[in-house]
Length: 182
Image 1 (spheres, rainbow, N blue to C red):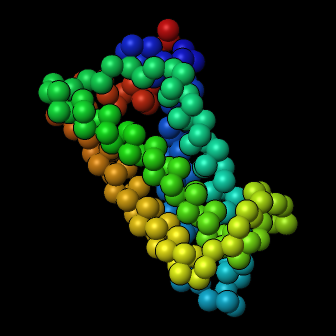
Image 2 (cartoon, rainbow, N blue to C red; image 1 turned 45 degrees about the vertical axis):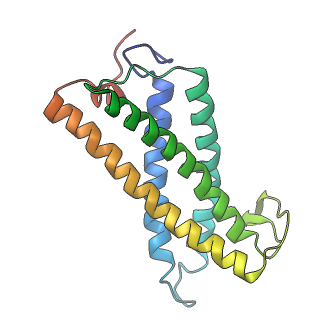
């Protein structure tokens, strides 16, 4: 029930998956919203604090997901063609890569001047070095495009799950939503 089997995801995988989804969706929405705030907006100083805090939470969760993926084998991919299996594996690992790259670029932006990554007065991670203005701008652009890439790839991932459910009529989607007794 807690670990994955050949045919079913366990509780740990399902919880990590959906927590990641919720965090990514919330961080993406907040990130888009906060960049247009003016200095005098009440949320101008608060939303970046929440964004940083939950960005670190997402980074830790992503590392836990990857470790869990290595330790607990995923169920067999339900696909009719070999290219679909290869595509599914590639998309999953690309999602993991983006889930690591996004917080890393956020860290680079937040610590570009050599200061610690902090939120609400708490030091979350130490600042290890300073970036030149050009590199800080590059990290900001990479953060933005990585976020859009993650959202785009997650959309493809979700559409593939719906295709499996409604067209192929297999249990790909169900086994990430429903926990069968094992």
